[in-house]
Image (tube, rainbow, N blue to C red; front, side):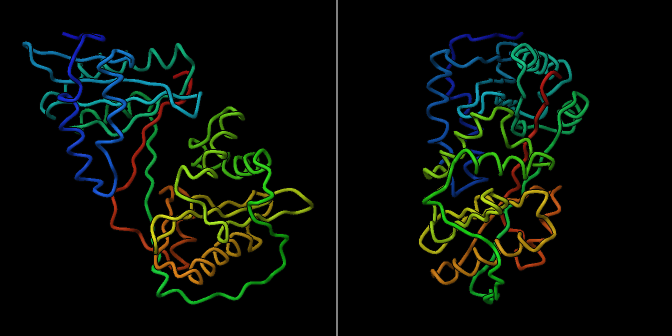
Length: 305
């Protein structure tokens, strides 16, 4: 039996999911991040579906609009036990989710299924979902040696940055890579994401370690860094447009950031990299290591599937 938007206590339903994720990511406020979602679910302001068997809840799903990317929807699916997963139950949930995404002509983004198993994984793949695995990398700056830089680029900081030009350049750099899914298809969304970035959505921006490279007045590459703690920093974005790759620009941007972070007494610097992106080898070569931190796994269904 399936039910849509029947009044339920979502704090109880999602408790095991929240507990599981809190143990997996102890550095994140998982419970706090779910509070508004639970409130909206309890008020029937988020679309959801539950699956019952003999008056027992065995599965659930909910779907909501992205807050900053209008070309996609985010969905969450869970089962009370891997043993409760059947193809029929998966079909009920996925036909509902994909029907909404298809009708609204939006990408469907999905976190790993709670209590998922081989059956649910195979169903995802057979349904056309693509998998992205992102890995966190880290460098201990105590072991880093300053690198001499060839000052041949026209560089600037963020005080005079044009958000539109930065947004366009960043998208141009990534749109032919496996990381394109991170960006909205809509320019106004991408611009708002950049505005949010520089307002500190991913941590306070470290101005001294944010560098823009220009060529004839046009942005050709950049590195943006933020503060994670008193001795920890995060390279939020580093990119080089296709026309300037294999020129040493990427190495210049990375070394500039690392030199400046070390000079500012940061001890650790982190970044995320797509497991399919050749950039991971670049970072490994210059001293980054894979961090002892859970991978970020994202499933997505392109528009129109």
